[in-house]
Each structure stands twice: as structure tokens, then as C-alpha cells.
Image (cartoon, rainbow, N blue to C red; front, side, top):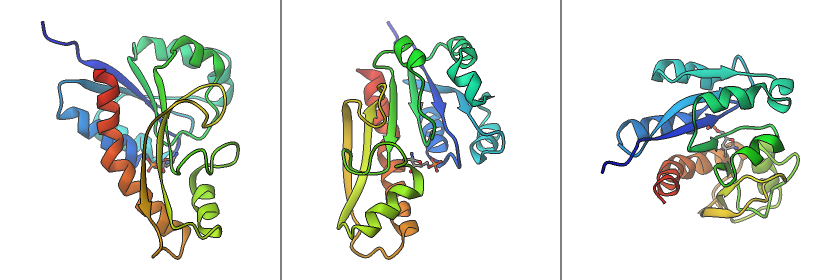
Length: 191
Ligand code: GRF
């Protein structure tokens, strides 16, 4: 019997370069499709990308996320996996409870270092630069009720000795994310 094509729903707050990589990757595969992109920002670049890629979108505010409405919308997409790809808000407990072990996040550092409240986006790379670390990397992990504390699924490091700015570090981390995130998602979805 043929395996059913699985449904992936993405959550993204910003540019959405990871979201685009994931959509394009699965457009070439029979394992899964990105069926929707949810964003908390109506002018996020990820929404332009979604339009170009023909992926339906949902935009919501903090109240809709935390008080039920987003969960109702999410259910309509029947997600097999929910992927936070550059989603900056805390994910609400009632959604996590509804989808146990079906929500994953990518963090742009080698957790448990540089995780927790306030450690997102460029703040992470600035802290790494300030500490003069020789390497940084990515962590893909399950999402639980605490920031960046769910079980690790995958980590990859990169040497940043030649980097002089947080933007250069971010660029190196993005390269890793684009290279590994879609394939790790595929492994999870097939297991
Ligand atoms: C990524 O570095 C991700 O790890 C972090 O936010 C960034 C999002 O980048 N959580 P993009 O929007 O996918 O370009």
C-alpha cells in the first residue's frame, strides 16, 4: 500500500528563508507537503514567499494564539507535524498538549547554550560573538512547555573563528539550517 502524503504546517515570524527551503524540498518528494504557513506578523516576508509558493497562510495575534482560535484553525489543516521555523513567540501549552511529540523547533545555536527567554534571532548570534566562541551551530528539538528545553533531535556545529560580526555568524548558521532542516523533518515524518 502507498504511504499517505503527510501534512506539515509551518509557523514563522520573519523572513521565512527556512520555510521556503522546506516547502521547496517537499514539493520534490512524495513523503509530505507543507499545507499551511501560520504567522503572527501580517507584514512578515514569509507571507510573500508563501503566496509565491502557493501555500495557504493564516495570520493571528497573541490573543488568538493563546486563547483557542489558532488551534481551531490548525486542526482544519490536519497536521502530522508542526514545524516552528523562525517562530519567535512562546508556543502555547494547550496546542502542545493537543499535538504531543508532533511539534519541533529549530534554534540557531548549540543548545543548551544560548537558549531560553530572550535568546532568539540576532540576540543569539550577538551573545556568541561577545563570548568569542570558536563554534556555533543549530539544534532541532521537540517543543515542550519551556523555551528550548524539549528533547534534542539533531545538532550540527560550524566553525566561526573567521567571523567578526553577528551577521556573519547568522549567515553561517542559515547555511546549516537550509542544508539540514528539511532532511531532518523528512526523517521524523517517515519514522
Ligand atoms: C533562523 O535562524 C531560526 O533558527 C531562528 O530564526 C531564524 C529564522 O530565519 N529561530 P528565516 O526566517 O527562516 O530566514
